[in-house]
Length: 377
Image (cartoon, rainbow, N blue to C red):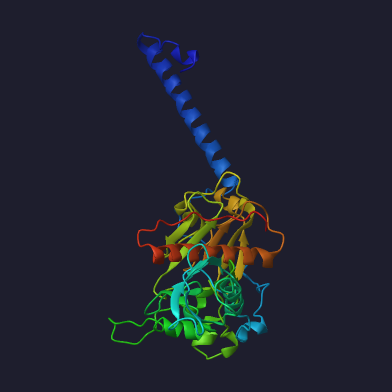
């Protein structure tokens, strides 16, 4: 509402009217100049105005190299001496010597039991072949005098490894015998090569390839293993190990952690930290914006920078330019150890990729899961 003082009537008669109008217009002009001058002084004396759309983001200068807390265990380079243990889906041949015409083919059911002749369901899940043989002989003794049982593993289906990504035939492969990483990749048809460029260029990004065991990434250097022939990286696999070799043609930035929509952001020229977080629909309410991390480089030899995102969006610090394959991580709490923080971020990243790619391999209509955000850092 306009103040009442502005409603003073302008005199209506001759010279007095013209004089009043001039005074009124002069007051208005003076107030406009006063406001404009105050605005200029405020702009020049305060912090620079922040424009999140600006493309003048600066390169990172505070990247620090960090090493993984887990290292390759020398025992992983030796085949496991543990006996094979049966599981659901395994096919076996069982024969009571002298009491049958030959072996009987059966399998371990989803409940872990086998059913053989008159013997009711025997729980063999987790037993070695020798332990299963002894159990069958014990139960067969109720029907046969001093039975001698022979048991043979016919087909392995309960112990498998994942080999996904840029290999010729990605999928799940049975772990019938001790198997190394190179043997698993060979079983999957080897690294995928271009059929359209007329070259044999291998399309796997070995610097960002990984193997996961029990939810954590193992520090295997795939580039040294597959390009330089470093056999010290060729570890033996265990059941449910997950190998993933991403495409070298992809160029994305990954935004994870305390954001509304963790996702991969397509890389373009001059992608900034603010725009990448904006693509993830911004940080969550309780995010700790003073310790936003950017992880860059090989997954086994990452470099990390800690950025004050809050200062950037408030115009107190310059925006940061990102590069392809960067991992942006917005935490819920401040970090305590830089090495542990980097490990947390990399393991969160590989678990997310593994869940997405594994789900897609099992079901083409698979919908990507949300990202689990560990609180402790």
